[in-house]
Image 1: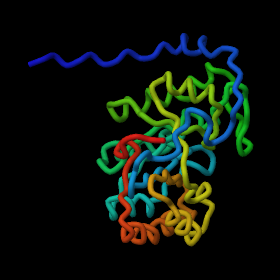
Image 2 (image 1 turned 30 degrees about the horizontal axis):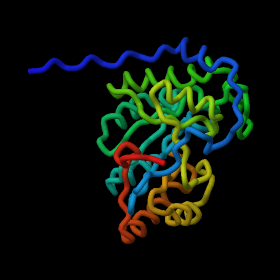
Image 3 (image 1 turned 90 degrees about the vertical axis):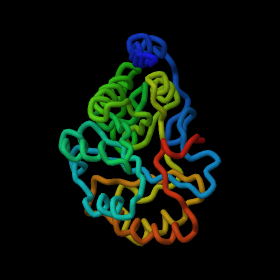
Length: 246
């Protein structure tokens, strides 16, 4: 029997910080260079992704939404922040063991990912390549310990980053993941608007919603949208189950 290959060496974070020292970004937003926003050649597939942001008013759990995913056997990619893991360690471990769920990295402190301190929605971002690395890598290692394998996808706090930060994420072995359709506007939309947003998705869409705010209309709206999409032949996939991204 051939020996198992050795696990890959972790990236040299000091070398990555030095590589991007002084780099000046020219893009800022939710779809900068280096960000994937949809599935490539997806035919009738769409990916449901959910953020678990953590922090004040963000540590909650939408049990109705999680129950819907399980009941309808809906594959989902859940981006978990370090603060949400702190508040929900048992549930995080449970999700990691659920074959329908793929856990992904939503950062250590839920910060927008900037090398110059840019802000999004009033949240101050990271201020240097070293802070970008810290925001990604601390939670990367935490998820590695929880899952037994490294996370593949990273979504910054507020989904905002610059293209230099996106390149740093790539060098750390993850892919910045944006979205095609905003399904619940941070879990602030009523059910009817969630339903309308989700059912408007085109093939190949990546939908962003939230699993940490149970008072929103996400669960009810998605429950109404799922049969409509399935009757139209839509297949739901995780990001890793989708094949290539665009």
